Every structure is written in C-alpha cells, then in structure tokens.
Image 1: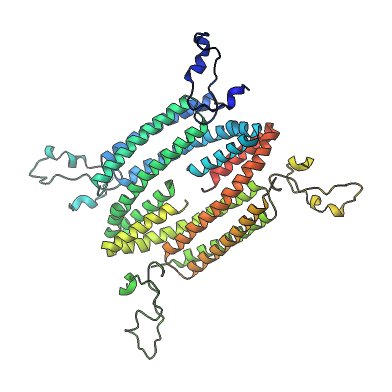
Image 2 (image 1 turned 180 degrees about the horizontal axis):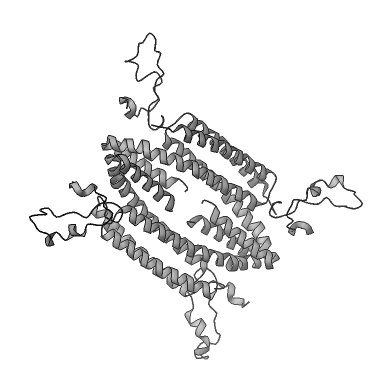
Length: 133
Length: 133
Length: 133
Length: 133
C-alpha cells in the first residue's frame, strides 16, 4: 500500500492521477489521490459504482417528479408515496456505500490500528446514527 | 367550498380544467380538479408550496452532487454525510406535506364521515409507516 | 356522546363530572374519567387492548432477557438482534395505539373543530415525528 | 488472548465454564466461554455494562408503566409519548452495544482477516439495517 494513503490533504489533487501525462520537470512525483475525509474512497467496485450512479440519476428524476407534483397541487398522499419511494431508493444507495465503507475504509483503519482504528470506528458509529435505514 | 370538492372519481375530470371547451350553457361553472388519489390536494398554502418547491430544487442539486461524488470515487463517509443531509431535507418536505395532509385532506375525510373517514385514517396510517422520519 | 368528553382539565375529576345529575345521597354511579392528555382514551377496542397488554407483558420479558444477556457478557450481536426484536414488537404496539388515536381521539378533535381540531392535528404530527416506525 | 477466543462453535461449550469439574491433569486451564454468535462478547467495559444494566432495569419499569396505562385506558397520545421515550432509551443501549461490537468484535474479525473479516462486516451491516436509530 502506498505510503501516502494515510495523508489527509485539505483539497484533492486532481493532477495526481494524470501525473504520467504531465511534464516530469514540473511535477516530479505522481501523486495518488489521498484516502479519507475530503479525499477518496479506498476501493470501489466498478459494477456497484455503475449501479449507484444509475440509481442516483433515477432518484434525481424522481425528485423532479415530486417537484412537478407539488407544483401542480397534486394530492398530498400521492406525493408522500413518491417521497417514501425516493427515501427507499436513497437508503439503498446509502446501504451499498456503507457496506463498501465498512469493508474497505473502516477495515483499513482498523488494520492500521491505534488512533486511526478509533477514528474509523467513531466515524462509522456517527454515520450510522445519522442515516435513515 | 365547491360541491364537487368531495368527489373521489377514479379518473381525473380533465373537462374541469378545460372549461372553456365545454358548452357554457351546460356547464356554467369552471370545475375544479377533483380531490383525492390521482387528483389534487384539498388546500395548499402558497408560502409553504413555494418553500417546498425551493427545497426540492435544492435536493435535486444535492442528489446531482452525490452523483458527482460517486463518479469521482470520493471518500464513502463524505458521500454518506451528504446522503444523510438529503434524507433530512426530504423528511422536512415530507413532514410539511404530511401536516398539510392531516390538517386538510384527512380532516376533510373525517368530517365527511363513514367510509371516507375510515379510508382517510387508513391511508394516513399506511403513509406514516412508509415514511422515514 | 357525553358533553364532558371535550373537557381537558389538568387533573382527572374523579369526583364526578356527572355529579350534578346524580343523587348526591347515593352518588352511586361510577364517574367517567375525562378524555385527553392526563386523562383517558376516547374509545378502546377490548380485543385490541387485550392483545396489546399481552404484547407488553411479552416485551417486558424480552427486556429482562436482554438484561440477562448483558449481565452474562453475551455476544453483542446476539444482544442487538434481541433489541431489534423488542424494537419491532414495541413499534407494533405503537402502531396499533396510533391507529386507535387517529380513528378516535384525532377524529373527535377534528369533528369538534376550531382550536381543538388544530391541537389534535399538531399533537398527532408531533407524535409521528417522535416515534420509531 | 486465549487461543479458543476465535472459535465459532454452533453450541456454547458449557464445559468451559465448568472447568473445576474436569480432570485438572487433562485440562489444566479453565476454558473461557467462546467468542461469537451463541457465545460471549470479546471485551466488555465494566462501567458501560453497569450503565446498560441500569438502563435496562429502568426500561423494564417503563414497559410495566406502559402496560398499566393501557390497562387503565389512558389517553393514547400519553401512552405513545411513553413508548417514544422507551424507544429512545432502548436505542441508547443499542448504540452503546453497537459501539462496543464495532470496536471489539468487528475489529477482531477484521484483524483475523479472510472469511472471518467478511462475516464480521456482513453481520454488522445486517444489524445496522435491523436496528432503529
């Protein structure tokens, strides 16, 4: 595992992944995007990412649909049924991301141990208490 | 209150909204869109409607933001915090719509009484069990 | 429906809201407890009451079981599965009470109208936002 | 850490807790109850255990109070407020147990790695989706 995986820079260095294309004189070391808050995920399954992007596009459309229903003064219960459907879809995306987070990011923190393990567990428990299920 | 406001026709009366196409002798009053499932809300507060439309546009933008974060493989916990924020915003809209539903539509059904009161209560209880709070 | 059903006195008047109608010498009639906060439910289905009492006794036993598991340092996940079961049972009781509340107490307030209708709706919406579902 | 702490036998080894009855020559060390489903927690903080036991006794009393309120046909909304309070207390106990579970049992499974890490994460995610928060 690259040694900079633990770094927590305040801004993502987007040039990092294009290091090999940049002038080596200007940018001597290819910088991997850092892992952690404000940075990147440790590991992402391509199929699950694709499925989540698809679901989020669909949720965006559902929200537009709810907006139109409110605009048209549609029956409240019909709008609320749509909102409940959006909440369910959104919880599905959250559940998948949480699974990825536990299996990769939290597991990584725990394996590193010490303060990083504590931070990973505390962050997870805070997330759980904030999310609808 | 127009007398047809209580009707719960299975299909929307589109002719109501197209009053100008009907024979004015036969149909002297423009017919309001019917109230109930598949139809319209009984009463909508203009300010609350405006606030909800604004919140839904904002939520739509938040969902696009979550989509971008997933696209960029951003740190899972950061994405989940955003999703929790969307869930909270959406619950806020739902809570406002539910308040309107209880105070107008459910109350109307209860005042009508009989099967309509039962239907209004049952629908409400089903909604409550489906929505995140 | 008795006229005192709408009263919302801070303390139950056990001495008899029907006192003036009863013979003071005999005072033979049991006095109906008042309806509302700090008082009694408007209507209770005997079978549902019996079922709820049974479920609550069972939940009490489940809580004692969870206490014993914690006492014995049992595996956390096993304890949490039991707690999730208790939460589900308790939500079942709450759902039944909420149905009764909507169909009787809230409906009564709405039929009375005015400030009492508003209070019944506001109280209901507050309850919904407090309860787990 | 004793070597049997990782074992996940389908049934608790009751003989482990009855070490004094075994032949001391054959079984020199009293065997700790095993860790995992059907067994014991990996680590328990004495103060948190004491606090949880106290909270569970209090919840048991609250449930008895709810039982009495139902028995006395008390006002539904008053009962529901008590149930919401019980739900909150119970979620507090669950949150503490979940924190302990993540920091000790899940972390242990992740450190062991392989199938045990996967099982620990899957079990955690299932727990999260079952619990009210």
